[in-house]
Image (cartoon, rainbow, N blue to C red; front, side, top):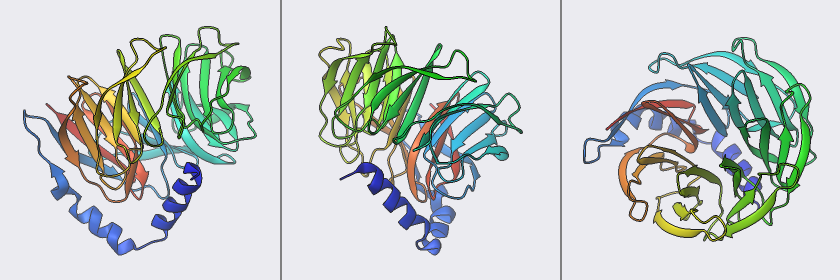
Length: 332
């Protein structure tokens, strides 16, 4: 099954579905945050209702940048986590999927519209300054140094020189056997969540000639990836979160797993905890201090389906379909 078609169809059905059910979820969510042992807790502190399907989020300073699919890039002031406020937006052709913020620029992966670079120095008045068109479906983007690494469903990983944001230039490409959904870059290696083809590890030390050096097959679709230390944490759809030891990137091995109740779409790691965007089961916090034996630390159910999570400081920010932007206070 094409994961894009599945996600789009499911999301649209939810949006046009039973609004009473959604309202019930909003009214009850405060009762659905489950306390955990050892003093860890997640508490919802703020909420902003944003229409439509929210597929990606990045937080930088006092602002959250949300890719709002058909409605472009939304910029939210989260300086007061209890009362997030939208202060700016930018609409372009295509559908906003992934977003990454570096310095004064937001890099947005647009489905069938390529990579758009938006100057957000003035978050109330964002301006597009650079575009690199792509004929296929771009899903995710990660920026490191002078390069943006773009996950493209049909073309795999492409490397873009963004040293001049006004004129981004593609310099290299590495095809993946599966649909590239998400990318994370660490220590000259790009880790690509490649849907049915699992985790692909690509050496990008030479951006003009990226080369795959390792891979790990997954039981389900690899949709999201985050790398911390010697481990890659992969959101593996119905197979939950898989923890892969990548200390030897040419021979990655599974170290542990956390079987989530629903569909794991995204993951973010901060300190000893992994935060999993788990669709209809909301936000799951997992203690990964021992990667071979991850333990559930906290759960916060939400209305709708959570698809993306970003952690900054003491707060976790989640978005998705019929979720809006929700802010959770982390205490441990």
